[in-house]
Image (cartoon, rainbow, N blue to C red; front, side):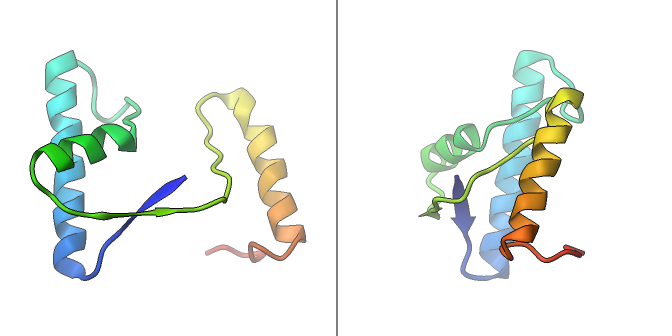
Amino acid sequence: MVLFSVQNLEESEELMTNIIECKTDYAVEYKTDPLKDEYLLPIIADRMLKDGVTYTVLPTDDKWFGVTYKEDKPLVMESIRKLIESGEYKEELY
């Protein structure tokens, strides 16, 4: 998993603007629905580099889980339950 690190609000706004622009361009180029399609962060990161945007990528050993299909939900729920039991996540995340 990689995370984008931003130093201030201006960098955060620039990152979000780039993500939105990349997703919109992708949807136009491939004739997809930007509200339904997945979009990979490596594509965004590559585009940002080509556009001259600088950013920091933070490595982590944490696992990422996603729910793409309804069949994914039980595995993700079990993984989150284990993180709560181990104390890595709080019982109430929000």
